[in-house]
Image 1 (cartoon, one colour):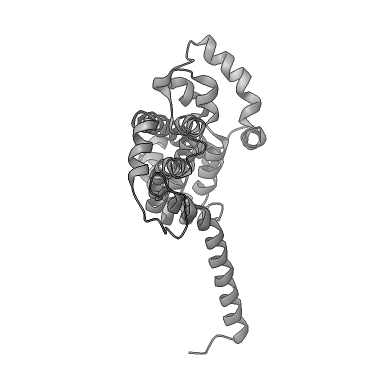
Image 2 (cartoon, rainbow, N blue to C red):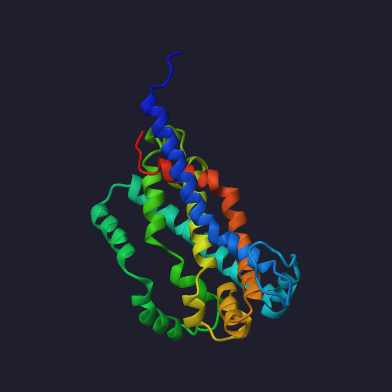
Length: 275
């Protein structure tokens, strides 16, 4: 077996060095946040932990921030929005990928055009619609505005195009309907794209502060980010306590990302590549 050329070795070395440097830059702030949260109460935060370390800040932040209800609300909203987006994106994406009808390309362009419209520009008409439907200060006010998303439709449409159409034709010959083909053949093969959409949507909803701030005023509807914002206003000068609260709200989505990172990478890498 021939040895790789020297230029390839140097290229791989520098690529690895750049990736490690980028990873260090990304992880360093998270590391500082975590070390600051371990400072014992009443002491000055020190990255070397010269004053020792303690988990008391986590217990105190959880108690004062009342994060249990916020976690339940954020989980409910994020799961509901994610479920709606997966269903709507799968149906619309499959129609745009496989069904042939007049105006399909124009409809695809309209879907793509929605990606360049900031949600903040739509907040007034959305608020008026929710108010007309008596949905302000309800969970539906946090779910319905983002129940469908152009990014999800485009993502699944592009992935569906990578699935060989011969599989669907064979199923149609056996008497399968469009719904059966989508449910039993296409969606199982599109699991990487579905996991990608799930992670993007769930993390986006978990980190969303705008909708809870605009569409709700009831304390029992507080989400994690709204609770964290209120917590920050109360404990601006208590950095260890504040960093403990930030860590508490970050751990769930970090754990979720680590569980699905392989499917996420596969879904992004293969989307848009036709067989």
